[in-house]
Image (cartoon, rainbow, N blue to C red):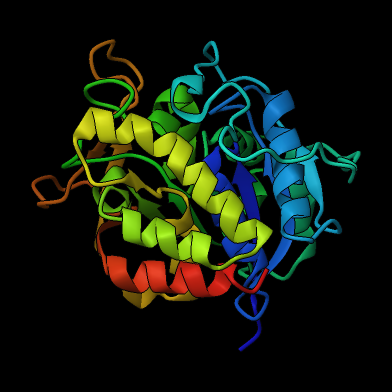
Length: 313
């Protein structure tokens, strides 16, 4: 089967970096048409830089990286240096990138790609706030019907919030954008905290990354060494959740994941629950299903896949 054409929309972030590395290591499964940077974990000048750092770490400097939106649609940017460090990729020492940014704006690249490629052949993989995707949908409503699928990391239901009591970070940063995306009519698959918090980098799993014995394996181990301190202290868990690689792992082996096709709405009006993903997991409303909300993962299978693919780079 031909590899799936994807656009990775991202705000790297250590876990974003691992998701990108997994995609670039899997050309038989994914054809990365481009990587679009958005403001999120850190401001845009760092996310666009970090995306290129990761491509060069993977020895894939021909990957096209585009700079996108530097602020949410209607709100002041909230960032997460308290989790990811001041650079967004704290942990390993990685050189500044030499590969260029593309001249085209990320939103224009998304629109042009969806209009140029055959309908139903391009999957969008948002790993951060949904500003770029929503802006593209607002500017070019015709692209919604051309999207094969949107597979995104964001939201939560049983795990509630990680930036507020009710909201997950990616959705909270730009809830208006998330509302647009979830209402667009394209097939959507969601990797919420409910599943990513089951993908924990325990010490043996991180040792396996380090044992790869390559610059990529060492960098990934150092990234997770750095950002797990936050989650271990916050949740008392055995390691840090690898949120974003769940997106690219799903595209390689969806059988690692289980979920339900349900209705998901985004709260944009309440100060108390702003950015909440109101997921009708139990089917208690008559609102139509608009997303497959993933709830469980074969964590051992996920880490086996991740370790095997990262060892290729």
